Amino acid sequence: MSAAAKLGDAGRVVLRRARRIPRVWVSTVCAAIVIAILPFLFPLDGKAHADWMQFLGRFHPLLVHLPIGFIVLLPLLEFAGMKRQSLRDAAGFVLWVAFASCVLAIVFGLLLAYGSGEIGSTVTGHMRGGIVLAIELLLLLVVRQSWLAGPQPRSFFILVTIVLVTLAWTAHHGGSLTHGSDYLTRYMPATLKRFVAPSAVSAHPHSFFARHVYTVLDTKCVACHGTNKEQGGLRLDSYESLMAGGKDGVVIAPRNPDGSLLLKKVTLPPNDPHFMPAEGRTPLTPEEIARIRAWVLAGASSDATSVPGIFIAEDQEEAPPPVGDYSGLMGEIRQMQQSQGAKLVSVSANPSDGLILRTTDAAASFDDAQLAKFQRFAPFIVEAELGRTAVTDAGVETLSQFTNLRALHLEDTAVSGRTLAKLSSLSQLSYLNLSGTKVTSEGIAIFKNKSSLRHLHLFNTPAEPVSTAESGDRSTQ
Ligand code: HEC
Image (cartoon, rainbow, N blue to C red; front, side, top):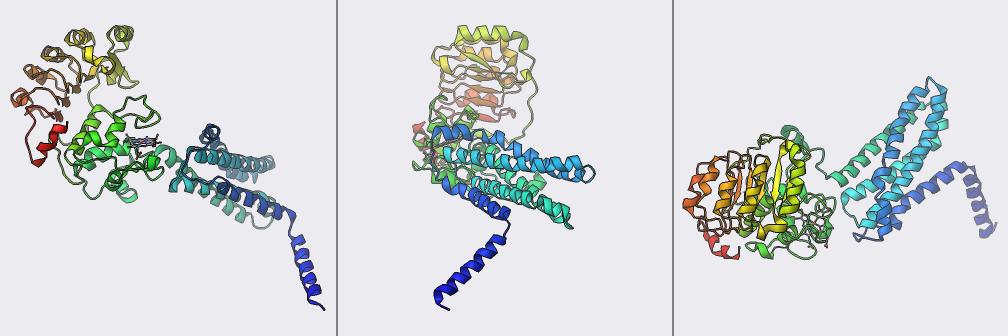
């Protein structure tokens, strides 16, 4: 027999065997390959792509609930189907829909990740989970009839269990993407937390950085600048990564807050496209910014426990007492806003959390007389942002009637400190910023023994404590 004939024979044998493979398996393997290939068609390269992709992709978080619902329903129907045939028939249908919606969710998820330029281990894990899940569902579809009818229905239920585990794993990764990886552990009791989520700042847990900078970045920035996403090539989930900076270089310039990109971004006008946090997330409070600024100015150390110019008594996170309900005054509050240029903003949807007096848009023209007009709302105001306004010592006297005031910004005003003693009656006052004013140590002596006042800012004032070598650099403030 010639070599060619032998080869022909072998080919025929292979073909005959292949034909014996049921066609359903051939198509299953083909479908599985197509699903597995999808991510290679849209490789996640960290770059944002077409807007229409993001537009459609944003329906992914909605769509994913379909397969989740159907998959959870499946074992219930299969079990109940042991007693009632109609439910068993329904289970077959639900499995089909689960598979179809799972594929749909994968496609939209890819559009979202590829369109928005998302990268990171969580997003790839989530994507692979979804693909494995779809292939498992496909397998279930193929074997369901024969396994359930055959002597081994148990194998079928084992496969269903594997599907449920894959689902839970994938869903958890998806949740980490939208809510941050510490979503489940943030409010976990401390004893339990030690085991599952060791702190990222374990090296110097008592440092100023760990207590007052890291905590802020962790809640407000890490969702986009952490393990899940590295927007702008920047991670803010550890001291090292913060100091390493992003695609445009360092973001923290020690001793030079004005030259620090991070501080620049968080102090831009909120509607600026480069404002951080992006996408309308909760901005940093003036107090948080002041702390980061002070920390940078003092050298941005990883282990220093205190920062000159900021006194923060140990954090005793007590909920402040509720203020009265201001809902009845809403009409007046709105009117006030129109005539004054200053705003009264609700702290939360709950009226007893109080109001914030905001002057940002009208700061330069906001003076003592205007402040006096807010006396009517005094008991409801818990925070007064009067930095850079024309408020003077007379205004401070008015403020002494704001009995529920917790945070007071008077930085860069003409306040001299002469009337500051009046504020000592404010039992809730825990934050006072007097930076850039002319207050002297005599003026603030009254606060020395006031333990409720946990944050007192005195940069660039005659009262600023002269301490350590850093004081020389403070002229940059
Ligand atoms: C909703 C997502 C999101 C959140 C939350 C967020 N950022 Fe960003 N951030 C981005 C994106 C997107 C970029 C890239 C934009 C660019 O480079 O123009 C970026 C870039 C930056 C950069 C510039 C990095 C570089 O080298 O160019 C800094 C600094 C920054 N963010 C700081 C912060 C800080 C501080 C917070 C928290 C207060 C924060 N971001 C929260 C999305 C976010």
